[in-house]
Amino acid sequence: MFDARSASSILEFAKKLKNKKLREVCSKLIEQHTYKGKGNFGQLLEKYYFGYEPNSAASPDFEEAGIELKSSPLKKLKNGTYRSKERLVLNIINYLEAHKETFNKSSFWKKNAHLLLIFYLYEKESDILDYEIKLVAEWQYPEEDLKVMAHDWEVINQKIKSGKAHELSEGDTFYLGACTKGSTAAKSLRSQPFSTELAKQRAYCLKQGYVNHIIAQISESEEDIYGKIIEQPSILVTGNSLQEIVLAKFEPFYEKSVEEITEYFRLDLNKNAKNYFASITNSILGVQLGKRIAEFEKADIIVKTVRLKENNLPKEDISFPNFKYEEIVDTDWDNSDFKHILESKFFFVFYQFKGQKLVLKKVRFWNMPYADILKAKLVWDDTVACLKEGRIVKEVLANGKRKSYFPNKSNYKVSHVRPHAKNNADTYPLPVADKLTGLMVYTKHCFWLNAGYVRDAIYLI
Image (cartoon, rainbow, N blue to C red; front, side, top):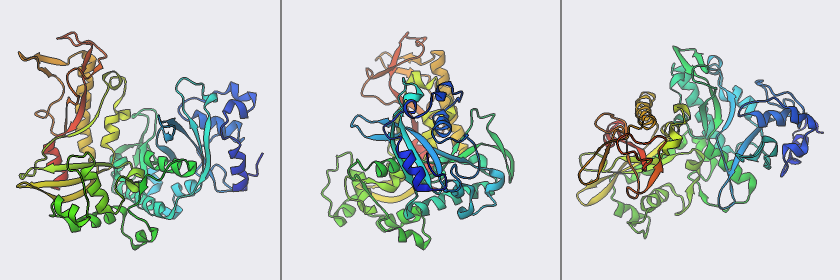
């Protein structure tokens, strides 16, 4: 066994799990387990390997050693490397108490300052007892990450103090998120101290990008593909947030043309290359070309480069990944990919045409306001209804072009749905045959942010 008072003893005992399955390391009692739900792997691990009853105590699982145990699923990529399957959910946010706390004495910090992480390979068709444990390690936050997380915690706390716990979003923060936690929206509603409006139950979580960073660090199996904006953690000691540091790097280049910027950095770039603007962004941030921006990856930040016409209207709407028709109708809004994207943090880089030249105008970190997410939900709801009812094609024109019932820009100000495919033959299966045409497949579509919304709600504000 192990000494529950000793961090090193607990870690050594945990390391015996590596490359093993629960069926191999636990007693036969595990066969009679009755734990249900998403967290049952962790519950089985706690009870049958470490020998304590699963609980929701405010203190760490190994209180005397100050260690919290967390297990999390992995997915294996085609190149053989591992990535996190999901964010890492930590402790529930108590809205009625959190506003009284400071970060260093907060429930989050008391419970999660020192983590024992156990990552297992999730396989859909396998029994939970046969998931193989791939990585076992302790985790304490590096100084530069901790500064960002403390700022994230303050952002969450300030929203609670402002009576806006119901408007919390993972897009509010960088590494430490506030994710929804509960079986259904109705059951997970909670009171908040400075508003009569009920708020969804939420928990502190490490964003999926940050969990991937942890995996890369503890596996030590990946090449160095990241470059840092902040090389020295002491830079953050000045009180500047990561956001302020990034904005300050871009400001000297406002009103400069892309030619002037590339000349300044002595860049020899192909203007037609897909990574042209990404290379300019990396250069301004001081990150080597071709490398991923570590801080952005940890925060799951979605970078969007927008080219504006002279009237400030974006040259194009902004597209998101295609959705699969059969999947979207079997998903509720709270678990939808679209909602997850809209609750992310974005980094917009705006260039504007001045005659033939393209000039850097501004950059902005942004996440969609709560009220606008509700408006986008109407687009999602309408799309799902069309698919379930087989109400897809409205009209087939003489030239063969099809007009659909999907939500369009004229009826929805935030978002719309339209094709995003190589051609009409680039399709996904439909859950129900289209009533007008009888089609069982349809050209790939995706959700788009309206160009007018990007101008009015992001660029001009």
